[in-house]
Each structure stands twice: as C-alpha cells, then as structure tokens.
Length: 331
Image 1 (cartoon, rainbow, N blue to C red):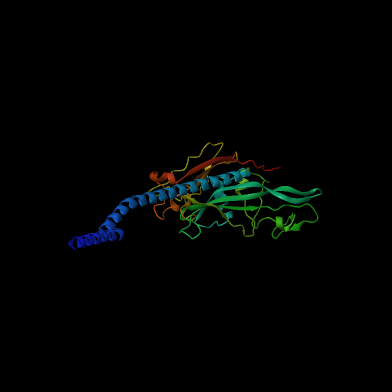
Image 2 (image 1 turned 90 degrees about the horizontal axis):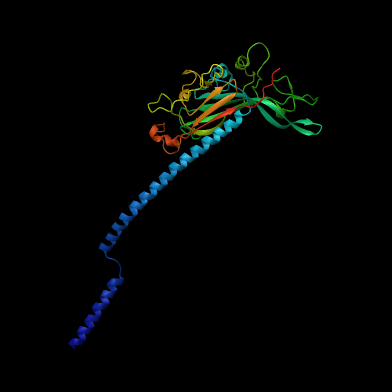
C-alpha cells in the first residue's frame, strides 16, 4: 500500500513539473529578455537613424547641385542668342526702365538684348516661314523679407522678358494697341511696354543702348522663377560668403560686375551684397562669365543657413563663360 502511494505521488509530481514547463516564462526571464532586446535594438535604431539623416543630407546636396547646374545651362543657352550685354554702368543707366524698378527685394544681375526665333509666323506662297524678333531679357536675384509658403528662406533667380512683334508687309496686316506699325496678327503683337533700341544718330552703341527707354504702356509680362535655393549669404555677414571673383579691368575689354551700387534706397534687402548669383561682363565681345552658388542647408534646417568654410559642401558652385552669337543689324 505504501509503495502504491509513493508511486502515485511521484507520478503526480512529474506531471506538475511538465505543466509548469509548458505554462510559459517566468517574470525574471521576461525582464532579462527585454533588457537584452533593448541593448541590441537601440544601437541598431541609432544606426538606421544615422543612415537616414546621411541619406537626406546627400539628397539635399545632389538636388542643389543638379538644380544649380540646370539653371546655369538654361542661362547659358539664353546668352548664346545675345546681341548686346549691359555691364554695371548700363544696368544702372536703364534700371528705372525695367520692371519693379522701385522694388527693394531684388537686383538685376544679367540684362541683355537677343534675337529670338519665332516659328512659322509669316505666311508665304509656299506655306509658313520662320522669322526673328528682338527681345530684352533680365535675370534678377530675389530675396524676400520673410519666408513664404511658396519659396524658401534662401534667395532665388527669376527671369523676365519682353519681345517685339512680327512686322508684316502685306495688306492683311493688323494694328496693335499702342503701336503704329503693322503686324502679322494680334498673336504676334509686341509685348506691352516693349520699345526697340535706337541705333541712329550720333554716339557709340553703348551710349545708345544705355539711353533706351520703355514704351508708355505698362508691362504685363511677369518675372518667372528659374531656380530657388540660391545662397543668400551676404559678404558683410559675420559668417561671410566667399568674395566675388575679380573681373577683368582691362581698358579695352572693360569687363565689370553687373551689380548696382550699394544704395539702401534701391535695395533694402541687401541683395547686391549676395554672391550667390553674379556675372562678369565683356561688353565689347558680348561675353559673360556667370557664377552660381546653391544652398542645400535651407532644405535641411530652419536656422544657421549661412555659408561657412565648415559647411561649404552644402553650397555647390558652378560657373560658365558664354559668348553671344546673335547678330545686331546696323545700317
């Protein structure tokens, strides 16, 4: 009898141990597992966050480099059609004839005349034919007083253009409002405010171009932003931007920076002190060397956005030298 009871007791104890083993982990085992998981996962999370931040920075740099180069290529193609480039003195002479002449948030950097192709504008016996018209183009460096929902806290480049109409010699010509000439159709009227330069009379081409005045009509052409995220750091900041390249001062070439004088009444945003977009102009040879510098930091942070030597990798530079190949017809 005693042996039977011992046997039953041992069997019951074995079954109870099996039940405990199947029942799960103890509290101590769970705590140990959580600590081990924390020690393993935390470094991995930090590593992943670091990888994501690095990728974001590299992507911002790559975007700035691509956009800066694309903008420079666009400006270069535009300049290739130039027939006359205004230097600093020329821009100063005609700045009141340009749009937004009283604006305090922008400065004209590149201003030039060019010949522009107008496709299939003239009707001939054999069909439609192409022609050329003169256009006035201006590139501005713009910096708002405060950030907006549309543009960044950096500077941006905007392009403005007005062009002549397509003159007609046929009896079916039309008259455009504000202009006495005859034009192919109302579709090819001059842009409001456009007036062609005058090369007749006494004086050099430079003097005549600097004497250009707009038509009496108000401009309707708007400035179109070419690229945003251009470096806004000024040369007089505590953490100053790189200085401008010194342009040639050769008396024959007479190349100058196309940056207006330091006058607060003209530009209270100090855009003329920014070196993110500027140019050297060889007026005699219709050649421009254009410099651009982007700002990738603005894509990443809301403060400490100015250029410093320690973060210069976030400020991609690009430059190009272009000669205008357009033809200026003179009698």
